[in-house]
Amino acid sequence: MSIEIEHCPAGHSSYSEDSIRYGRCSLCTREHFIQEFKTWSSGNDRIDMIIQESQINSVYGKLQWIPYVNFQNIEHIEDGGHGSVNSAKLENGIKANWNFIKQDWEFDLIGAKVALKEIKDFRYDIAEFLKVIKTINNYEFTEYYGISKNPSTQNYIIVMILFDYDLHNYLTKTFWDLEWLSKIDILVSIVQGLESLHAKDFIHCDFHSGNIFINDKLDPYNSDFRIDLGSVRLKNDSILNVNNKTNKIYGLIPYIPPEVLRGNEFTRKGDIYSFGGIMYEIITAQRPFADQAHDTYLMMDICNGVRPTVPDFMLNWIPEWYLNLMYRCWSDDLSERPTSVELSNSFWDVLVKLDNNIVDNDVMRQFKIADENQKNASKSQKQELFELFSYSSKLHPQSCYISRYIHTFHGLHYLLEDLISGKSADPNLLLKSNESITSATYV
Ligand SMILES: [Zn+2]
Image 1 (cartoon, rainbow, N blue to C red):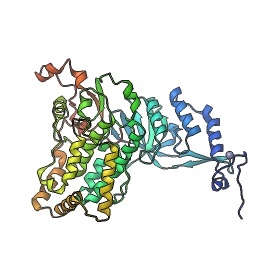
Image 2: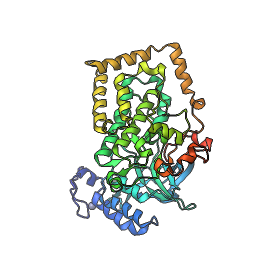
Image 3: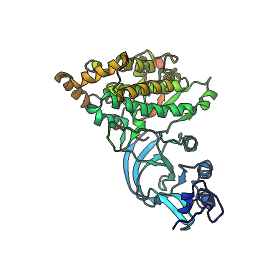
Image 4: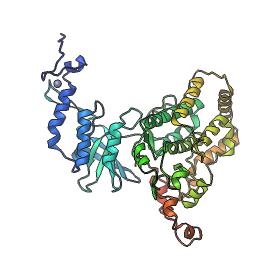
């Protein structure tokens, strides 16, 4: 029996007759969300308003207020710069559609595990963050479901998809088996995300391998990486501050561009510098400057042009074209750095040719030779790689891969002489060595 229904009982017509047939009507759904506005509040008018706007206007990814009682089996994952991350089971799921046949909500994600990012940092503006994710609703980015509040701490919680790996963990597990086709595939997936952020005039401002995620399909030929948007800012925001120097910047010293370490604004070209660090990790499986203290002295080195080095034994596994591109991303001269569009196009070209085994120019010959060299790695090269991988001995105790607030040289100018002469302690040096060993996946 097939019933042709074009309108729901409330008289809404829909482009999708199929949805109407199964009792789903987007306008009814919207109306029921609106009716429920008076039944919940986050306790913050700005947050309430953004969630409400999202429920009225967004077609996909409507943000929700998720009561804390909905979370079961809460387990701590890690601590990070803005707070802590737990995993939890969403017992009742989240509201997906109002079903006019059942006269009830249909729920998504019933029993699913999600990540709860509890924000303890009072400087972090959740309403601003929600505005950003409401604007950028795209598959390349991490999915956010909504906001909750921990009743015992009164901290807000960002409820988001739970990932199995960040890029760093993923590379540590897969590095031995990755050929150039897979490496370029990963980079294409990441840089396309950056490209769409930049196309919408957003700047990521904290781009590193701990902010890039993948789920549990360790298929080196099918990488689908998502980018966390926790620190994303609208480009216009920084334009307003073009004459203002910044005293502090949030991030990881090895990925922060020299101009920002000096106190200048973060631009799209700053994200490209950070992407250079990701390119480095793809070829070495090491995070940049892992064997050094992340302190003001490293910042001075970076501003004087020091960049991470690729171990000698790896050099013949890496096309010169790739190294040149990586060093251009790291250039002190912003005009030397490629744009995300240029990077995306270059990697895409190489990906298509690698995938189809086309060796039609010098660049592609470099890739072919690099793959062969890695395949025929000598015993001593393999041993060196193995040693590099047992990196607990290599990771400097005062390195820090958890995003945090860093004093820029602008903020430090009054202290710099005392710092160099040893009269005063370095405020950028993290003394709690245990913190530097855990990796910050979410915060
Ligand atoms: Zn309807």
